[in-house]
Image 1 (cartoon, rainbow, N blue to C red):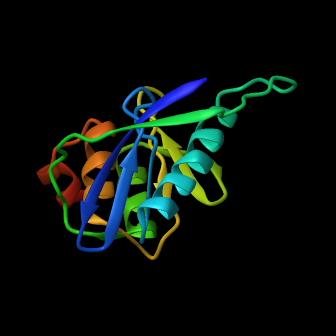
Image 2 (tube, rainbow, N blue to C red):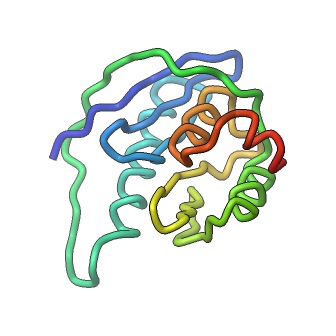
Length: 137
């Protein structure tokens, strides 16, 4: 299965998301690390919705770049707490934390600080405005 990813550069390195999997984001200091991390995030995202006994295989990743507004970097634990206040509950936690409110699901990389582009994508995919998220922090 092929997944198109959006790769963004920022002061902190790279942020990456999967437009067809709302909320599936990651980041890395280099382009290669960001792509490797999003492959892990895709697997974890799919694992959170796959029934026992089913299997998903990531075979190839295509890269597409488009613009995403920035939101200042936020500690991943603060982001999770803010989303919990908004009604999200953690579905899965490993290299990435996957919270859902039953309608939206997002993927938060467990990095000390999620970079600005990653946070912009998380906020958008959680169906929150930047102001709403800022108030939740």
